Amino acid sequence: MNTKLLNTVVHQDMRDVLGNMTLGKAAIAVGSAGATYDVGAAFSYMIEHVLYSLAAGTNKAIAAGDVQAISTDCMYLCVIDAAGTPIVVQGTPVATGEGAYLPEVPDGYVPFGAFKITTDATHTYTPGTTLNSATGITDTYYNLPRWTPAAF
Image (cartoon, rainbow, N blue to C red):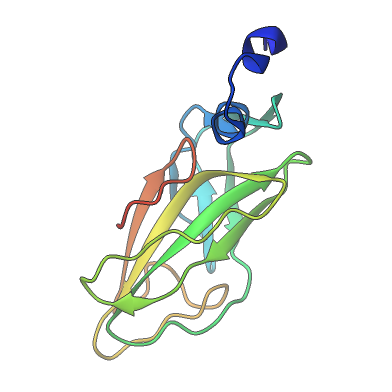
């Protein structure tokens, strides 16, 4: 990256956006085994203006988290660090249909995707335990170049 050009960007927020993003589509989808997700395509990403890449892979782990109650929507943000370690960050559940927001990106990570879990009136969801495609669960996947404040 042309650092001279980047140094002409006056606002730090804009420099952060330009230097921390996913370049390409990860093609995330429901995992084929257990409570996991798949990265269907290799992609490149930048953290602090340094370029990295992640190969496609199946059955990426979803860490244990708080139980998502019945009749709620919750966003789960897929992020990756410079070492190539992907993690999933759980958002805050809201009543179904109210518009769930992405959680903040942890320092040193960049987002590459997200998924929304919607529970029905009789089923809860436990990250890392419940299958994303289980009965009573609706899962929707998004590929993201960077974090967004929009509701899903």
